Amino acid sequence: MLNHFNFRRFGREVLLTNDFGMYAFLKEEEFRKFVTNKISCDDEYYQMLKNKLFVIDDPMELFSNETVSALREMKNYLFSSTALHIFAVTNACNLNCIYCQAKDKASNLGGYMTPEIGRKAVALALQSPSDSLTFEFQGGEPLLNFETIKAMIEYCEENKGKKDVRYTLVSNLIALSDDKLNYMAEHHVAVSTSLDGPCHVHDYNRRFRKGGSSFEYMEQGLQKLKERGISAGAIETTTRYSLSYPEEIVDTFHSHGLPGIFLRPLTPLGFAQADWESIGYSAEEFLVFYRKAFERILEINREGCWFPEQLSVYFLKKILHGFAYNYMELRSPCGASMGQMSYYYDGNVYTCDEGRMISESGNYAFRLGTVDNTYEELMQSPVCKTTAVASVLESLPACSDCVYQPYCGVCPVVTYAMEKDIFPKVPKGFRCEIYAGILDILFEKIRDGNEQTLGIFESWIREAM
Image 1 (cartoon, rainbow, N blue to C red):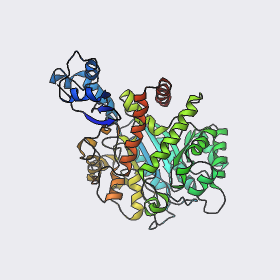
Image 2 (cartoon, helix red, strand yellow):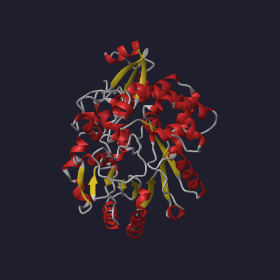
Image 3 (tube, rainbow, N blue to C red):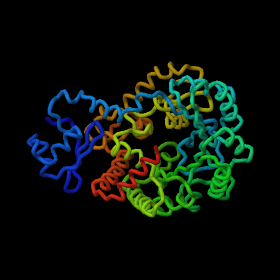
Image 4 (spheres, rainbow, N blue to C red):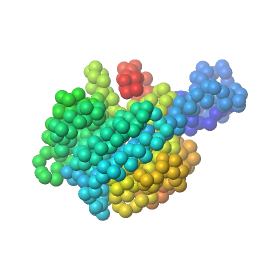
């Protein structure tokens, strides 16, 4: 008996996947025999298909401990409550990035979270049943409202009880001072900055309002963080200008001693959506960039340096180990509300960071409530429930029969921004094509079976855990 599966042709072979995250490559003639249910236990690939749950001898096998465990591992994030809480403490910023997702031409900048609202936001976040929480301070530029961040951390430390709370801060580092460095070191605040590549790429994308090089501030700030022993990472955003420099961008991350790179496509929100014609690109153009960068990353790893591409790590963990990291965009349903919440400076609470960003244009479709609500009230919100329903890949027509469905995810906010509906209407959209293209690259490497490459993949997964 054949179990449910999806497939796509891969050169002269056929790739099969199932809901348990298992995959298999079959030759064309093997696939024809399989799909017509003419295989027998004497076929050399029969046992492989049975072990991977593509073939079952008894329908009751679908309810065995093996299948239950496999599905539980792929959906493990559903057994935890909201762990990531993002506090946008201001929408003011000292940069004018050409792709800013957190504002658009209609935004009113200069709002700051008060310490009172900040403490209420923390009290609400602490109501999450999760024993381990991450509090992430964002903006705008959060260092411009550091006094409120201090008030929130101090309130949390006094009231967190037995919860383990980790603090992170996302900053361009321009407003970094010795006093702020001392405080972050004392309270173990990890920092993530933005690095878009070599100086000319970074400064083109991330423009300092007062003139000068934002790259130099970032570089100086990174050095100060390292000297104080503060955990620091960086994220990259790819614009049309970036597409010409894949290897240079990778080398810039590597030369700055950063623990890998996340090759991130533009998200069509805010200015990125408004100015898409000048800074955006097609999925095909991004994938050409990604493939060149990915090959450079593999080359660095072959030279003996552990240097992963983080988006591929999230995929590979599912593909090779059948286990899903709690990465919000690659969940089904997505992590909106159930995995993360976003608290804006004015006290409004949103399903996610993207939901908060879209409110800058005056659209509050993804608002759950305010910091005066309880956690239970927010989780019972129709917005929370609708967003969850809209992101279950197994029930979305454009996703349910896709071979990459077990490994992928959708963002209802991005769908809403692009299609004015939280349910995808246009199959194979921009983000879909990018994810599918990256998975094509990964499965090409897996199918080729190069031991060194597969060993690199395993090291990425092992060290990232």
